[in-house]
Length: 66
Image 1: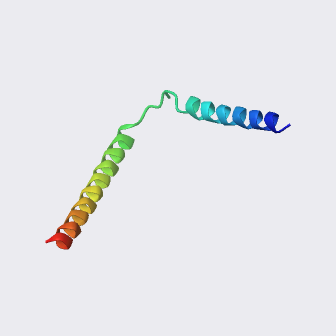
Image 2: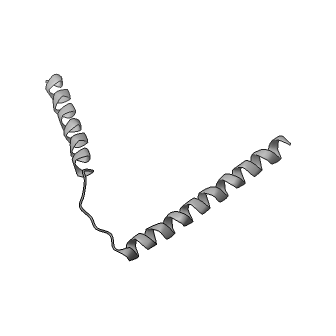
C-alpha cells in the first residue's frame, strides 16, 4: 500500500515539473515601441540600483578591513 502511494506522489511530481516546462515555451508576443522603451528604462534603473548597492557593499568591506 505504501509503495503505491509513493508511486503516485512521484508521478504527480513529474507531471508538475513537465507542465511548468511546457508553459515556458516560445511565445509569439509582439511588444510595442512604448513597451520596449519602458522596459529599457526599467532595465537601466535596475542596473543603476544594482551598481549602487555593489558600491555600498564594497565600501563597507573597505571600511571594515582598512
